[in-house]
Length: 175
Ligand code: GDP
Image (cartoon, rainbow, N blue to C red; front, side):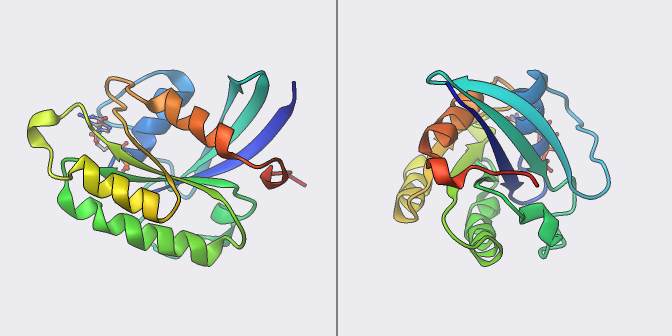
């Protein structure tokens, strides 16, 4: 039994559902309009995985995605990231590559990266094929999943797989 604190950053284009994923995971709630605060904000959530307790400190861009170069404090000490796209919006998927590039540029060393195709409940409106996204995630050695903040599908599982992938030395230690 151990307690690990993990700083995790949410990235992805505006409107893909980042804040909704956080709200679902942290409070098990869903709202049509999630209030964004000004600047980066974070929420914490405890999760027990395989007898270990993880304290996720989750940073959301809070509507600042257009400022590609987010404040360095956003990335500082991060050991994991979730890059989100919207399965119903084709252009949000190629943007994932840009976000991953930015991430690599800002975070030196290894980190756990997960790619999440959100809004998978909207089956009729799908524009991004699962296979394409899965292949890309495999190529960059990232976790891949499709989620729905609306139905809660794969939300908890996403954070569980991140926790399982974290090497012990990558634990965030606030100073
Ligand atoms: P952000 O800008 O990436 O933080 O995106 P938001 O969390 O603000 O979500 C943008 C819009 O998409 C909101 O109207 C949400 O209600 C909606 N949304 C988010 N996640 C889902 C989902 O899983 N399914 C559906 N159908 N809508 C979603």
